[in-house]
Image (tube, rainbow, N blue to C red):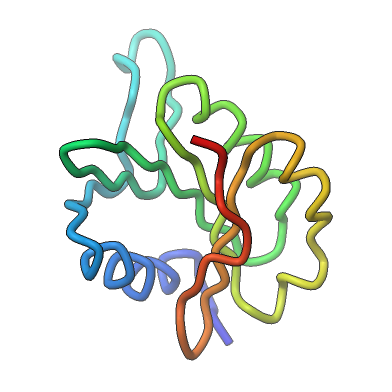
Length: 115
């Protein structure tokens, strides 16, 4: 379905753009001398800052990144191809407050993030 993580960007950006969010790609939340961490996508409006990590398969790595993001941002989501959603342990995400976005023919929030 998707060959690269970058292929998930366009539909996810369009999803948030419809909801009046502005977008930053590969956002660096810390100065480079402190951390090299980058967030795949950052969406902002007047009230919220939402971090989104894109993954093709390795949802566990994505969840780890999302939990790190939750310290800085209002909400954090993991975005996966729709055919990978079945592999995710939803209870882990709920417990950590991480949201889940399915990307396929349409983009939809499968699990809301804790704000």
